[in-house]
Image (cartoon, helix red, strand yellow):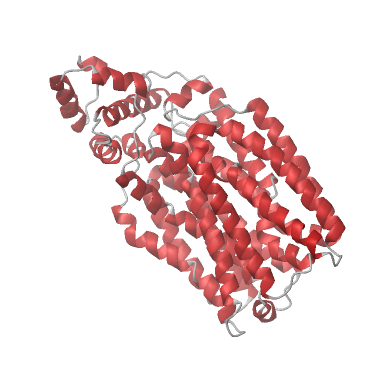
Length: 504
């Protein structure tokens, strides 16, 4: 099977869906620089460390419920409609936060915003993984993380820019209101986004699925056999799975292969948070202040930090389908542990000193941590989870794993301000240990999935796969006469029930 390029329509669909990911990045990042403005702290005074932790962590609490809701909605209403629902909720949340007159209203807006982001965070990687051709699935699924990074960087620069505005409510109300922009864009364009072809087949809407697949993967390099082979493989395997399984929460836990899938999904999401990346992301402005930075320099550094991750992530997306998932994860885990050790040592030596060179190196290694994370975990944990799940449990399994991610994030968001104030730089030692542990676990337990179709990955977990590989299916179609191929097209366009072999 020739590896075909991704056509413009597929790129357009995946990039537009990722606008919802931009919302996640903005919502997550905007709170860091917003809380750095004196006008914000004065308006909501007394803004204690406990309240700060609540403003950050309640966003995660809302996300838990959003992920859980999307686990049902993505199957019942489809991936497309779930993204649309999330955009409506995000728009409401942005309005509430920007109009906040007290901390309670701000926290309520953060909870609602977290609900919307939780839905996006679960649904968009699934959608993009289901519309992508196998050999480019890593790149296309990874667009979610790329746009999250862009959104986070954008939030940091907005915070920096508003720092130059006349001191007042505009400094923090405008950044919070900016969250409404990506939500509005998604709502305006959602009607042109196609349904996931695998979801359409799950609903037995084969004729629509065939049309979508042909639009997504047809006429690539003038080779029509690719989308025909993919359609047949999807349809036959999904129907076989439906004949022997029921899409339910019980199925997720009762079947040994599904339990293994869930274990790996939970582990990759857990080690993503245990890396310590969000502790640095959310509290980076406090870290810079602790290193002697003041005034606009704090938000300037936050803006520069926000750009480091997305640039590194683009490198990851370019190579992830050749590097593979497993190797990238365990190597990045080891390097993150080394980098965190350097950050801890340098912070211990120079945080309270006048040595500008030492403080500069400390900040440089904080930036480098974001780069290393973005080369490894940042995209891959979004890629890996949906691709190891079968269609019957993809939404539910993804929901469970992401909820674990969010719960760990909530704990760290709540305890980190207290931990930094009580034990200071020693807090970093926790993340050195967790990164080393994650690298070992990935090396020993994880499986490689690069280059395989979502249906073929089932065989890695010991499930029965009744369809040939895409390469074999495409080769078979290549050997057929034009008359036989046209006959298959006529059958498929009618949503025919039988596969190619039965038609011979």
